Amino acid sequence: MNNKRTAEAVILGAFLCAGLVIAGYFVSSGITKLKSLERAVSVKGLSEKDVPADIAIWPIKFEVAADDLGALMAAIEEKNRVVYDFLLSSGFDAKEISISAPAVIDRQAQGYGDANRFAFRYAGNSTISVYTRNVDLVRTSIRKLVDLGKLGVAVSGENYDAKTEFLYSGLNRLKPAMIEEATNNARAVAEKFASDSKSRLGKIKSASQGQFTIENRDSNTPHIKKVRVVSTLEYYLTD
Image (cartoon, rainbow, N blue to C red; front, top):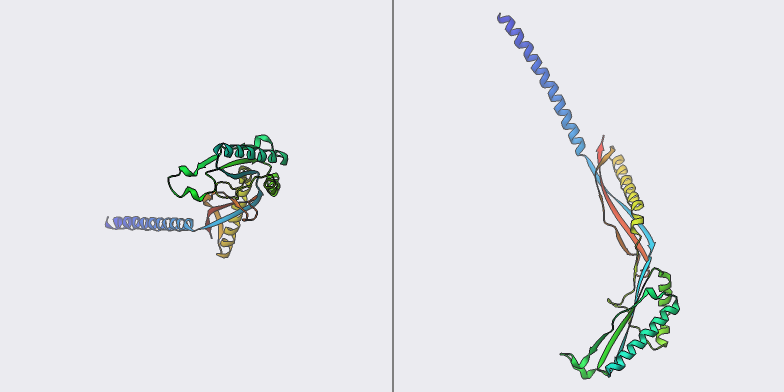
């Protein structure tokens, strides 16, 4: 009887040992696979494209001074007409031209400073703006501003509130191709890394599309824009 129980215990122990060995193998294999999933490489892919601006905003600002307010307003109105006619003769459509309300200052009414240091009591300015998709016409017409000077309109230099702007509005048309290019560039970098590390590139672990930026290509050509996007991708690595 005792021999029978001993044999059963031996058999049970053998099964337990075999079970532990098998379980250990699967646990070890699982840990190994889990660790292999933790191996990843993060890479960035760049896409850049130069495009011509398709919108121009061109403000033309001038200033006038006089001792009589009525004379000042009449001068502003007259110079507005001269600038408006100049733009029409340059080829712009009337719908593309807008005239802002003039700004007038009474220097004697100011609560600070010495008004007597100015030659004229009143100072005013007006801005005529062009909003157009004919960018080339704006660039050509800017070079003819000297003609306004010959007509008695002293155009103010560009500053923060009267600066010509060139814009690009076709970003949505570029996005699909640029995202594809950035993604392909990122994958090429990842494949090179995997090859150098004696690994194989696996599936994408995560992906992040960077923000699109539109900037002047350089300070001398604001009508040429550089569109840029950087995509970040993380790939699994396998042996």
